[in-house]
Image (cartoon, rainbow, N blue to C red; front, side, top):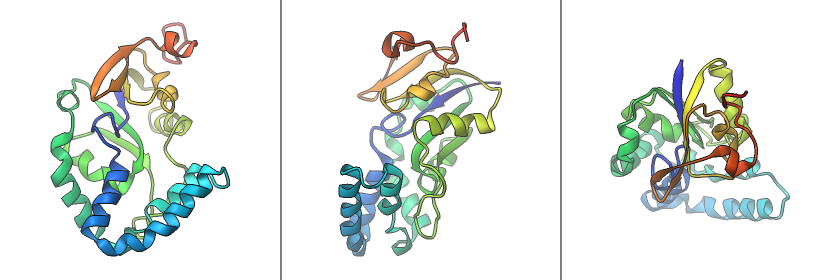
Length: 202
């Protein structure tokens, strides 16, 4: 089968959905402010290299038990669904969206926009804590090949040259860097100085 791969945050939408949802909940459910201090401490520890980024993310959604999660997610996307880029909604091939954002946040919008398959960071819906690995970097490829061992990836879209080299390398067609909401094609070999996994020579 042939399909395209998309990152989500700052690719399909012009914002980081996890961060924006956290601010949304802070203003809509002001009692979640009690979680700011431990999150801030976690950020400092991560910045100092004491804990990993994944361990930091375990603190980021600790407010989840304090909110009506399903209602909050639906209200959030009622407000922001209109910001999804039209070029994504007009896609021509089946797609897999692979994101580090929480499953509890993206499943709603994936259903609304008829995304064929969503792979993202798994969280405990009762506690907000990450289950397994953060879906980032090489983990994106591992999760993808776990489900699609033989799929042929045509085009890949992401805003991040730094974090999404692994999924860009899968493209048999074109790589697109999403810059200011616009997909701009680039040559993987020129950018990274190596051949794509999905190149004709592989």
